[in-house]
Image (cartoon, rainbow, N blue to C red; front, side, top):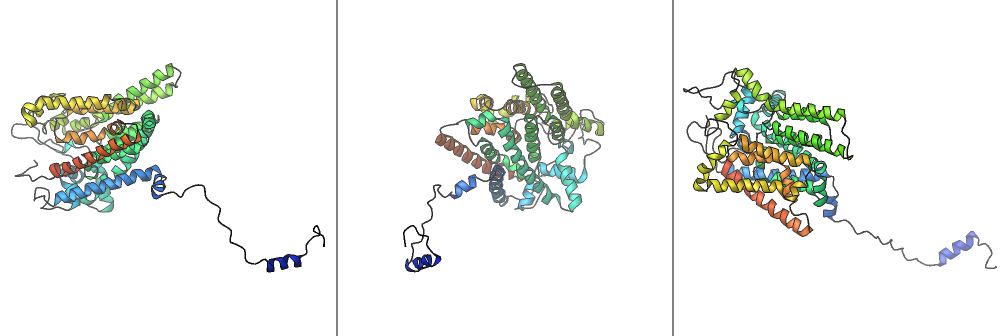
Length: 437
């Protein structure tokens, strides 16, 4: 048979039978290494990363509250060693919000023998307690269970929106410091007073609404932003600084349109005018309602005076006497140092890399709270709403990578330590007599 003759099926069968065993084929080598667990975690969606950071921080703070509750004595709110839910649902301002949820607001302002307005529920805005009251009616649950739970869930929504507000509102800063949105979330969650994000207070709701307002403004959803700003006006007295942000946003858009870098039509102008008006109205709506219901036009202002050391609300006046009360002869140097530090955080290059909306909010809000509140323990709690400063802090050292990680880690550890200290020193309180009034 010639070599070129076709082979029959029988010939093929004979060859197969006599060929002997064949070596198994080796798998083709892979060119990509197998991903490690950290690489897989990094591949998860951004919102999973945010919620993991949030959950870890809330568990950390819960541990601090439980630890502090073990040394809490009996008081006007609870017995000794209260449960976690009682500790975060009844103490301090939470008691006032509970009173609002269960009894509403008084039609007449309480006064002492001298005719001075006393502390009363009108100082506390209605959106959060009314939301909890609605859930109490629907579910039959109690304030102690529902109020801290609502605050906790609102804080989860808030950090998700904070992440997106930084991502959309600070593109230059994000480009300079990769991972900045998540780093901002971590620093917000670790902020020394961030424990109130799971307490029956309004910080969670306010943080959510502030971040949502800024995000919607940056994305030019002016109608939706107006609705959120109105809701903000019934949550905390912080809507007026948002009006300044709207004005700056409008000015930047107009200037860029003049340079051919943007468009700014009549519809945009009308939307921004409406948003600015909504912010202005929102800023005075609750005091106006208080005056209308009680028949005292400045009833809200008189109510706020009841919490101050001096019965007057004059912009920045508290800084003339409170620092001396706390620090004696060191009061003025401490005050100057605090102002200098605040100015530095607002003026460092990392701050200017923020978008105009986030930068303006930080500056306008800080100046606003310094003007309208009396310096005290609440000041640090109020600073939580200036969340873009977390992006500034994380972005101070953009490179090299090792320096950036070292800086961020050091700040994070310091903040977590101060958070435990704040819970232990500020939340544990053994009042005497009939405090609070």
